[in-house]
Length: 134
Image (cartoon, rainbow, N blue to C red; front, side, top):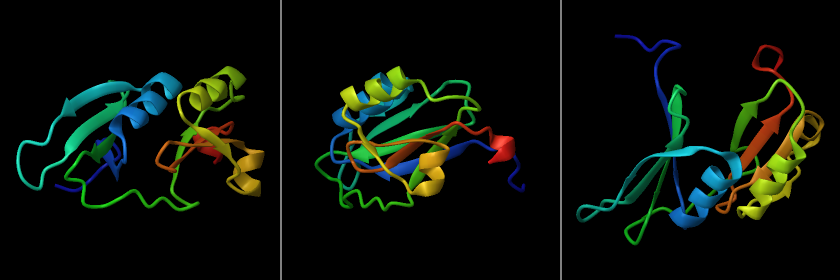
């Protein structure tokens, strides 16, 4: 079988604090907890899966005492949501109250949206553009 446009996508990242990440992504952005699990044995991690139930993707965050790799985001590690319209200022305020930090992502993204770093430093871009014209 070959991949297609309907394949589900998982974006996996390590997190220093799953509780802080959950506040940002759930309370700040509005994602839902799709699954939560604790480490079941040696070499396993605590797990938090976030997303929207009807989306063809989800964000998987791993953490806990057995986490062997710390988050190492770069300025180019972007999670972009194409809103096809203006960014709601209250949404940005919720993200900041939930532990996010508004940052510059360079001239292009500053022109076409708002960028907020999550508690681990990964960047969420709320783009005013639609996907078809990105």
